[in-house]
Amino acid sequence: MPTSFLATDALARYGRFDGEPDAGQLSAFYHLSDTDLELISAQSTPASCLGLALQIGCARYLGTFVADMATFPLSVVAFVAQQIGVDVASLPGACVRGGTASRHRAPIQRHDGYRRLREPADALAPSRRLARPAAAP
Image 1 (tube, helix red, strand yellow):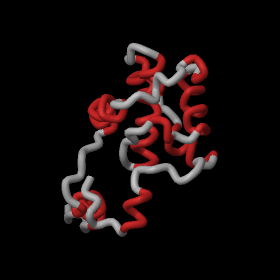
Image 2: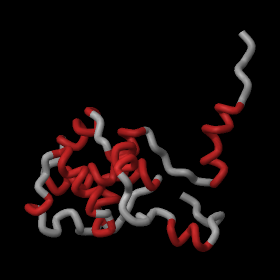
Image 3: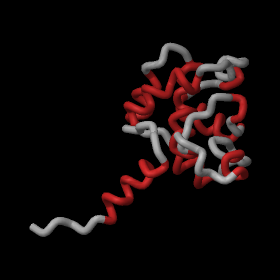
């Protein structure tokens, strides 16, 4: 997504966690639906399941994917791991390796209907459609 329009301090915070999400944020952004769980269960390893599940919530919470899996707050990892039945302690470093965001980006984009924004104005397109008056019958 283009970031040139962001102020310096906003750019520094973009796509990063700012502390631990509260219970409401965890529930709103990291609760996995049945269709999420179906996509996640198709992964070949528990580490890949956890990585995909974390990135699904991350795209919803931050609006982007996080390249450094080590930056996920522990509360997020625990909340997501519990939902998919993965014991995080049994995955020493497996989800921290690089490439997780790029590997899971395309399946998540297809699953949730996300697309890359090319221009800042692209972000306004949905609100512009909603703001248009309804056509006369």
